[in-house]
Length: 378
Image 1 (tube, one colour):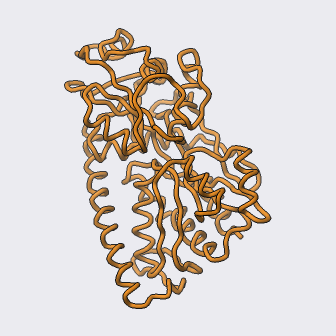
Image 2 (cartoon, one colour; image 1 turned 90 degrees about the vertical axis):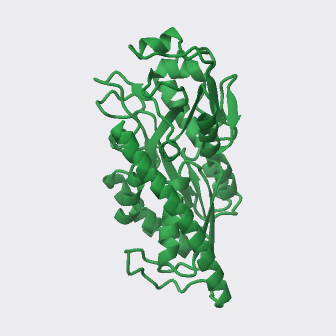
Image 3 (spheres, one colour; image 1 turned 90 degrees about the horizontal axis):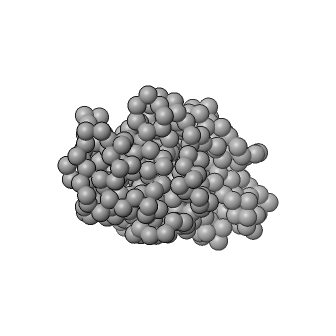
């Protein structure tokens, strides 16, 4: 509980910083326009950081995953403070919407919690002239299962029980299956209200991959971005699901960890078969992500995650958010900014801020390949 409280305080402080930073950036944008800025020289390096703005200019539009929003807010704040006159506008929507926007050519890059499908790669070739869309792993972290059950400060669940809760087979909090995993805990007869994402979501797909790999009997659905199970209630974005869980007694939902810590929503410990149920923390997610292997080919760095891990302290419900870019064929007016910004997010400095925001940095060996690939974008 002390660790959760510490992380929660960190995330709350960071959220306040991001809000204040957004206000500062808005003001700075107004000052630049008033002063007749031409959109940045692309030559400035911040004295307070190692952010290099070489080739960056004007405005860069991006959109997609809401799971990485809190990380993106901090990255954008830091980057725009260093690169005067350059504007990064990331629209937090969903992985599905981000990929659609990317393949329509309306954004410089997209954020997605799942790698491009083969048909999406094929579609990207019409936008990436002479190339194709590739996946660059940039943000890791746990998918927290948040709950609202007054009087229950600690809750253990396993994959089968989670599957039954989200598919509507378990309907009350004092169900024998939940009680068996929480000896000595007084569970109420409160009805369970399970919340899921209303739109196509990579977070949904990653949860589905975990349940499909570990509880196939109780979760017979394909791991798709669209919510597959009957029943439950829908909300928009990770923020929407978290808000519903926060306010509805008996609620349970899934979202990226920083949404739980910033709103003091308790999270489920996962019984994986390890020596003890595993808490949703950045450190524990890192242990699972460290075992990831690159499954993409060429410049594509899509990862294969082990959702069935039973390693002690390895939190199994993880996601990796990719920045989807063209390997070749990027628009000339945004290429410099895309390379400059993603060089920063993949840097040691950019990755370092992730832990404080409730995320898990990408393993160093994989991240080194991300930097090389970003440097070679054309």
